Length: 139
Image (cartoon, rainbow, N blue to C red):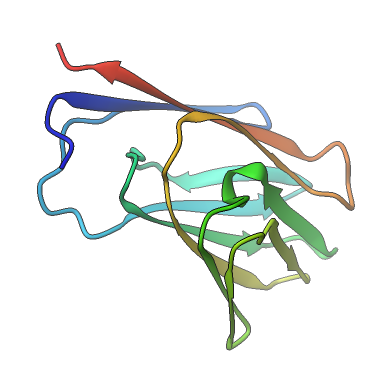
């Protein structure tokens, strides 16, 4: 259990900045982040602090009329489960998900390591974002 640490996340997704500071969590089952792809931009539509070692769920929805990719090195080497169109894919080495227009996907994994993680669309190189997970000692 995390008792003497608080976790801070700074997420900047294509110009949208999010700063959240966490406190120790007692019984939180899973932490969620909702990301909407709209107008060739990643947007965070629900803000929630992320903490190491807890189940994490990223809901991604493509509202554009073109196919996009949502990928990140954050998932590399971690057991990851992707749910999309009634199909579940899981394992290590999942790098992200392709989303057809007006489709969504759910990505489940555990945050295990702090660091800087870039989100990208491999189809549209100008679509990028960044998630920075820092740990800070509790005050």
